[in-house]
Image 1: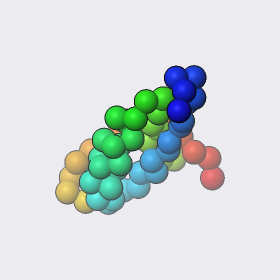
Image 2 (image 1 turned 180 degrees about the horizontal axis):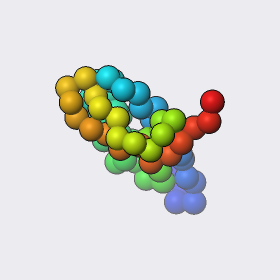
Image 3 (image 1 turned 60 degrees about the vertical axis):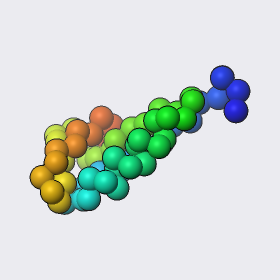
Image 4 (image 1 turned 30 degrees about the vertical axis):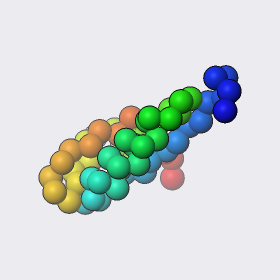
Length: 63
């Protein structure tokens, strides 16, 4: 991969999800060069995971 290549990865959130399902992939993807990660949900309000952890979306998708 050259420095000019960029990759955008979207991780879809939902209420009651297991936090590790987002935190794990985000940790791995964020260590790669040229990767930009979006945490996606239908609203920008914090999402509560199954263990009570709050995760903040930063991008909206439209249904």
